[in-house]
Amino acid sequence: MTDVIPATKTARREMIRDILAHESIGSQEQLRSLLTQRGIEVTQATLSRDLMEMRATKIRNGAGILMYSVPDVDGGQTHEGEAAGIRLARWCQSLLVTSVRIGHQLVLRTPVGAANLLGSAIDAVRMEEVAGTIAGDDTILVICRSEPEAARVESMLMELAEPGAVVTN
Image (cartoon, rainbow, N blue to C red; front, side, top):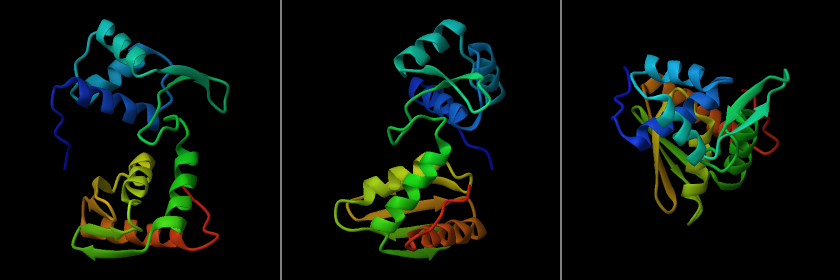
């Protein structure tokens, strides 16, 4: 199953954010090529403007190579995938009250006012199994791509909710 991506600025920028979260991209041409592979045609001038407006910076990765990074959905940088996992574990331990699996969907309960925080942490980890989340006041709907993937995501979230859980990405 492939995602349908509209030809909008918002969709393009979210794809840029997603690519930068999963890949070490050192040049605009490399980023432009990956966007094209995903069906998004963009000029160099538009991509440059997108990166500037998204507050992109170049940082050095663990190997010392310069790569692009932008603020992610939870405020951390896209290259901080491990940090996103640590935040998810912290929020699961603090906020996850219950989970109910219904087919390929999870209904997560949190204390009143905390659903957006936990939902954002789930989004920031960018699990392939998760198509998306919808957060209300104290409830999050996690839509997974299949029933077996929903079972894996639920198991992982519940394990993270245990005191002293360690993130293993």
